[in-house]
Amino acid sequence: MAQAVRPTTDARHHHRFRFTFNSDGQPHPVENGLAVATLVLGLLASIAAFWSGLHLCSSWAGLIGLLVGAYGQYRSVTTAERFVFIIGMGLAGIGFYIGMAHGGLFGGVLGG
Image 1 (cartoon, helix red, strand yellow):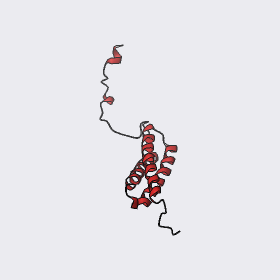
Image 2 (cartoon, one colour):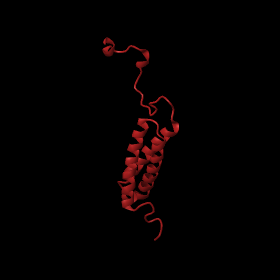
Image 3 (cartoon, one colour):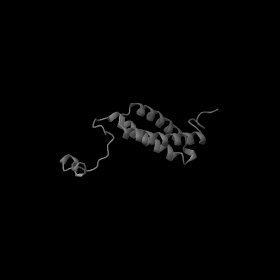
Image 4 (tube, one colour):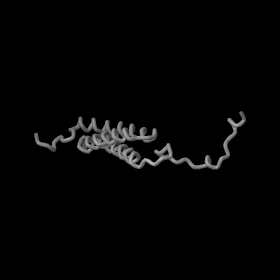
């Protein structure tokens, strides 16, 4: 029972904290790229949604962010990837819907 409370002195447990999406120890470059792309598109869409004149940027970045995020969520392997996908898709959805409210995907560009 003393082993349960004794701190380990194994050399492999003495390393600095490093954030990684690959918590399973396997590389996932496609999924990691999709996760980062979803997060960037979500940030772009949600920030652009603050200005009604940027509704094209906001709505398109949001739509693409949602589609990339959905595909990435389908391919994701680790929980860290899924966490980033959900945050990015939430931001993309907010930007998409506010961009749609301000004028939409083609507002003012296509005559009608």
